[in-house]
Amino acid sequence: RRSGLRINAVLAARRKHPKPVTPDTILSLLALQFEARDELSGTLTLLFSGGHAIALDVETIDLQLDDLGPVWGTQREPAHDP
Image 1 (cartoon, rainbow, N blue to C red):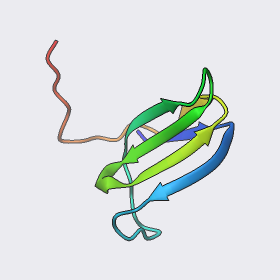
Image 2 (cartoon, rainbow, N blue to C red; image 1 turned 135 degrees about the horizontal axis):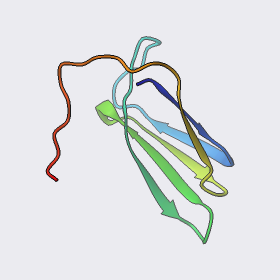
Image 3 (tube, helix red, strand yellow; image 1 turned 30 degrees about the vertical axis):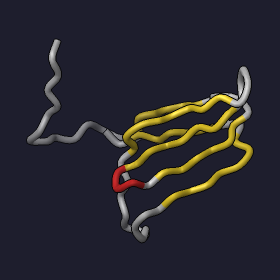
Image 4 (cartoon, rainbow, N blue to C red; image 1 turned 180 degrees about the horizontal axis):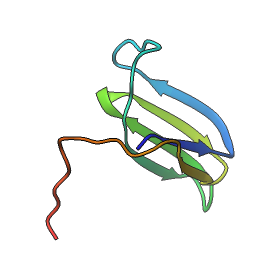
């Protein structure tokens, strides 16, 4: 499912692109990491496929994730141990 992630309260942003990025490049968000500076603020790092990353200095963690379209079919599904 295609989704949109909105991140609020961003003070600064830095990116790391080990490979060239074109308008057709598709990056899959794999993980979020947070390194606290104090009780609320810190650096939120978005880790993408291909080793790409975006580090955001934030006042606080304030995120919104929304579905943007319908589910699409796939021949592969993840399998997890119970």
